Image 1: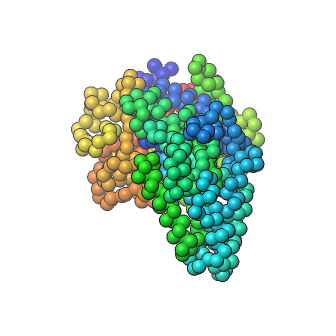
Image 2 (image 1 turned 90 degrees about the vertical axis):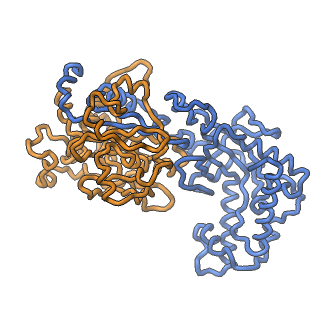
Image 3 (image 1 turned 45 degrees about the vertical axis):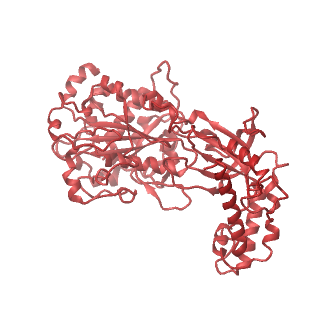
Length: 302
Length: 282
């Protein structure tokens, strides 16, 4: 039919089709496909599209539904991933961080919890942000100690917002701050972990390796000790790597540079510092700055 | 307006579903192309963002929900197409006059079943692929610019006149396409001049769709756009599909990539040639 029809199709409008593929690494656009001139190709395209599964359409099935836990590998003490799997429940409605992102790492952080909540409630002790799990005898103060006497009224509005609206705009600062802290306590008690979803370049050092190295440095450095988060579970989902389509199309001669893959990392959840003010805020900020500065000077983290 | 194209594609999909190809997964669920100019809502934290693909590719069950068509079990694509409103179905015998004016208002009021009218905005999560349809205005057949990472050089207008002998990559044979199936461009996201990122408006200039400015893409004066009108499938056209991809990718951490289609038709009734194609197929 098409052979015979192709003669008759000469007079048809030369309508065209382009296919665009957009992922975290970049954009790929096909050459022009004439709807009539290349009609068999169009039909093959339709045939293939018709048989696409969720993954082919771009849906990450592991994250499509929060009803079932995702299986991640525990991070060992030497900074490697174990072979066993642990289920981690995640809660997309508990969004800690997200931003508009088309390309790049596209980092999103949401609340998470393990199926066994026995020993993971580290954040329940009320530590302020940037406080790690190690170095319990470090110089940092806990939130309970610090927050008893707020000095100024700064950050009240942000605290009210972050508390999910529980703190009214017209409410007294102390009341709003208490509401914020109460909301934080409830969230942390419910979801004591955070799940970081991002698309790092595969050529870069994996995050848990950096963290373990930083923790090792922190044993001898008081500015680092206690400020390094703990990576509990992680996994690379290489089946979603951006290299497959480029390898198939022979677009990426350098097999490493620029290739991104989906990586999930679970860390302990820290208390935010939005409700701090004055000297407390400055102390917390300085601790973060000093830790980061010393790690950078150690050529660990950039 | 997009019915000829979507119905022809649906026509092909329904028949292709009966084919088993070794190496490809077996056919599962029907997918359909649905004219969807009502808008698709974003699921971001803050409401208000809408994007409007001309045609949305979605599962048949989703499309039935979208069109409020009941009894979806066992429903075929052709049956679904027959249930959508008249203005979106192809005319078996289009009038000889201007095909763009063939829809009579009386038809809309009399023949539209109320249950087939979309009554809500679908979510992008329901959309498998967004399809953008562009109409070529002007007399000359447009030319595809060479997609490289470098700045696009001025287009040789004379090349448009010789479609069979041109070195224009736009005129590749199927074998050429298989050899160089794709080219990477970075211009959709960055790396182009402001002028190159211009989104050319439609001929009528009254499109209700999101403008380039809404999408964060720079636009230049109308006069510049009109001068570049005949240069072919614009990067701006591709930008339009790029905004759909951007919306989808930035909207969720559970999306790895977006696959969108851009159709470009010559006649005023976009891709009206498909009407003849469907008759040929019969």
